[in-house]
Length: 386
Image (cartoon, rainbow, N blue to C red; front, side):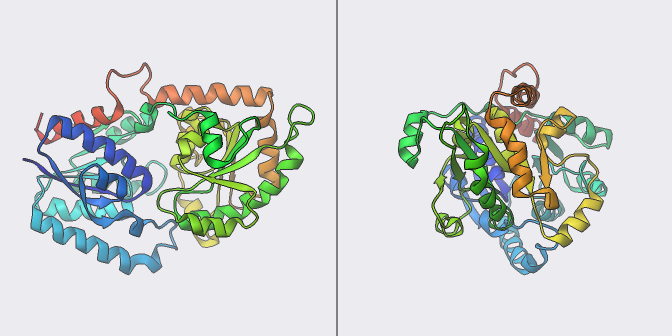
């Protein structure tokens, strides 16, 4: 029997953790998992010691007020690790929390695998020393990351992006429309303000202003009714809180962001994992984001890449508009969104570019194994359990 600590601090990380746990279970039937996560990981058989929703903090300055709570959750996890004595640990994304977990477990002689390695190529490159000290192997999900990490002496392996393996929605457009009281004959626009409450609080007000412009900018086909708006609610966010922010009910709250993106004509997406979901869905979209003024000032100076949107980084050029901080205004969003709603050259070009990004995320010619299984094989090899 192998006991594995697994730590996923965000909704996207939890999704990847579930796939990896299932793939490992196929290879090690008596494996036991415990650690950090949410309901999806609990349903997959992980004993949740720390709820990931307690760790969802965004921004450099915003994290300061949460430090006591974060430290308390960290100590709870480490105490449990001391009691259960895991044979290995797998930490997923969330570097602010998981680097501390990796350091503590390494000191206790537990080998640590980092799945979805942090984006040190974007900022804080000096943290690469932490990989040399505490991490046995890095599993990366973006193709360019493998070479970046290897060039800096880290044992890294590109295993493919888990989201690139997901099948299209099982629900039909008509069924989705009936479930959420949408009109299947009208176009839909998905608004994704973020997966954490702080993000939603910063991004949603501007998106609400954008929604008021939709009837003016969306008269497709010379008089068609304006598109309907959908807002997928992330698992870590309370729907009643979001409903209270919306007010007039013009926006339809839905579940299942991948399905919402799949069925939408276009989308407005906060920078993060959802931009990858939109790219994989092939849905033209606009990237937006806003943080506190101080976080923006501090973070902008540390950023080492020309774009924040992952599809643009993967493509090596800007294929999706980015409206960040002061540029994120209702008028700017409407201006970028308009050509994506009709059959324009801009829309056609973006659809083609997004298809290229999807192929790269799948590892070029499609691998014979899904990403989660490739990751599981890499874990077993790294630990000598193969």
